[in-house]
Image (cartoon, rainbow, N blue to C red; front, side, top):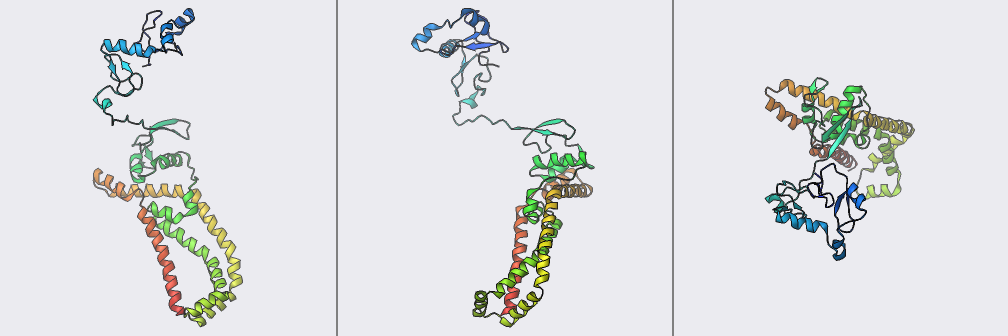
Length: 334
């Protein structure tokens, strides 16, 4: 309903309807049918112009006499049978008179462009992104897949649909090129978390050994180790060993670095697809083992989603390994 619907054009005396073309006087706000205003050639409410009056105030007063309802939010006087304010669209009830009342925010509507060219409109809170929960995703219900993904479904569900319908496996996953082990641990993919961490460790060994050799050859560092009571004979043995294999370490440094980067780039491009397969495998296992729908729903929620504590646990593992190496060296050099 338009703001002037139900009001009367003061020239033709006809009630404004929703599809009427209306023009408004810039001085007093009086509305007219466009054809009526053009026939008059000017606003006929000129007495209001002289006193700085407003058509709206006159209209409000007229509606009050007819029993109109004044909106406590914007002050617009509505027709007696109005349920919502024509001006601000707030409900004309006790809730609208509460000074602490805030109008509910409309949920954002999103658009998903499917590979087949179709568009799907859905609300931001819809985990299935406008698709039916019974949609088949590689033999599993989309609703179950969304329940397992649990977080960030607006990103993953359309992506999973694309994987299914186009058989394309490539996408872009930034966390997988930066910290793949943390990403997989957060998504409860422990096998991939340990594998990516192991590959990172192996590819970092030549660089780590060369840095250790540089440290042991530094005079100030050796003096610090000597003052701290380190086993200088053992340090010399390690230094001699690393020096003897320095060329091999230098030859391996660049290839292993490139291999590590290639591995990360591969995870960046295929990480989402790996997660897709992990989700399908997990959902299928839960469906086959859960005896009741309620238990299946509980297991999907418990075993899916993300867990930031896993990230901290993964970080703790690496810190623990580094600490173990440090304590081992300290024991050897003592």
